[in-house]
Amino acid sequence: NFLNRYNCHKHIGVIKLNKMSLSINCEMLEKCDFFKHYKTNAEVVKLGWIRMYCESHEKSENCKRKQILKETGENPKENLSPTGQLLL
Image (cartoon, rainbow, N blue to C red; front, side):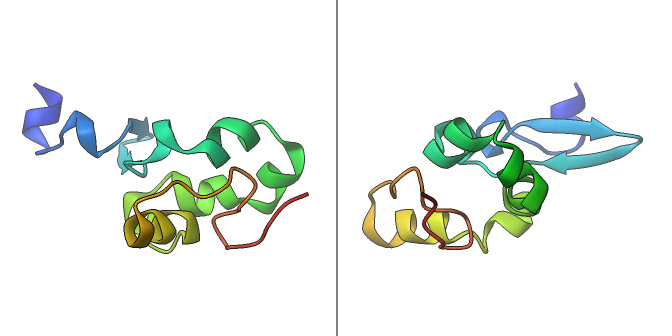
């Protein structure tokens, strides 16, 4: 089994294969209101926030949304970007 072979677990995130590389997304991705609401927003895609924060478990540790969730136990507003900037 591929997941066992690479010691991956489904609860960690979505597994994405890209030309022989293994990338594990942020474990909060499926629950993240920002991702759900803005994943098809051209400006957000252009700025690369999803690529920079959501598509890497390691990089997602820098996400302000994730940090707030860990500190408070509450989901931030959906318009709070991973950088901490509020979108209108």
